[in-house]
Image (cartoon, rainbow, N blue to C red; front, side, top):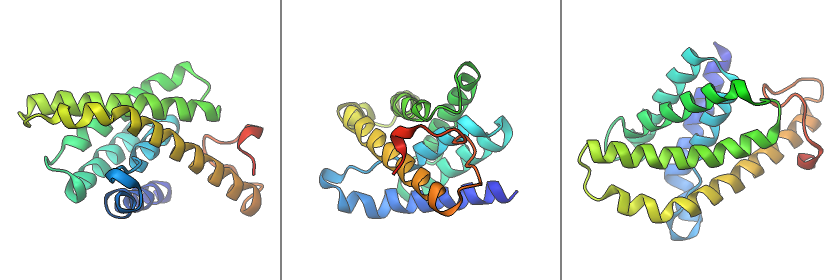
Length: 177
């Protein structure tokens, strides 16, 4: 239960950063989707029940803070989690490059699901807003996922050298500080 609480608090912090602070710091109103990075990490390391609950709940919180249609990001992030969780059995989940690959694929999937749900919910011209920004959003998400991976592995080596972070037990030398 403490792990779920830690994920929830981290997700809440990511929502506050991505909805409030980062769009003002990064030009043109872009912000990395930190919550998507967390959901991909959950998909690689958590079971279906816990991860689905957290993905939907955090997505709904994102809708409350920065969304226009309640449940839109909840469903999109749930779809991303279920896709990553379904695919993780076919890959080596200990590989840190898999996190970056899944963040890129998750960004594209999130955009596609939001566009699809926008058509179903009759949200006027949502695809016109999302589609041109999708490639830059994916690049920004990949950069921030790489930075977070580098930061977490550096902190793990300095502060908790004997404890492992789930999913990052066997670290690649590319991400060492």
